[in-house]
Length: 161
Image (tube, rainbow, N blue to C red; front, top):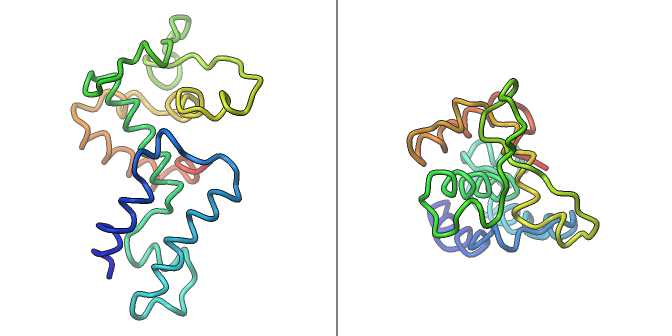
């Protein structure tokens, strides 16, 4: 059942999530209900709380996965693995002296409308700027992913909004 979920259901729910990622909590809850309902159908999981089911099955919440995917997309842009160049969506912070965090900080522009405030190129900046130098300097995408897992396990609430 878990393999079916990961292959058939989650792939549809997460497809191009960097583009359409919802920002209203009611929309996030609707998406999360898909995983919530499905994990209840797995044998011996019906009586457990949602968070406990996720822990037992080794799953992340869908919101955590969407935010993680956003960070991975920015990393791909930094390393040149993406068709979209970094300069098309972001500006590097040249005033940052690298005293805290890492040397690849991004500038966050001021937004007055919700559509631009929650757009990919603006919502991912705070989370990206709070990464450490070791994570940003990862040699490959897989190393970057493993360091994000480490951060998630050690910095409570880092991946969540």
